[in-house]
Length: 100
Image (cartoon, rainbow, N blue to C red; front, side):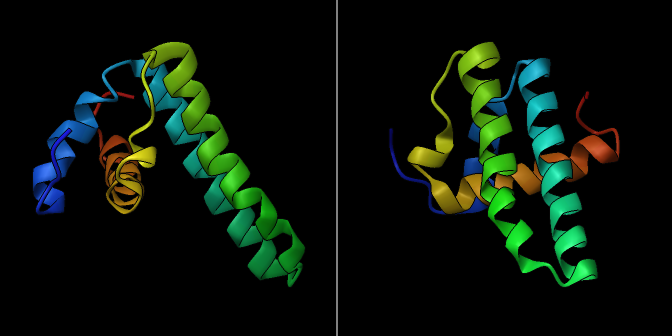
């Protein structure tokens, strides 16, 4: 796979890797749990909860890819763009621009 010179160039590829609705739902659940864990940790001052952030974020996303999408997560090839792509896709699902 070739490199991408910008996130705008990468994002269409990222969306193509998330064509399965159940995979997107797994991403959405994981990202929502990441937000919940961060809010919990900050509001309670219990920073030990933050170890759950990567577990929730990556765990749900990777299950979505391996079980439903049947592909390898783009995180392994493009970690920063994939992280940004996940949050852009999450926001677009919240706004109804991408079917949930």
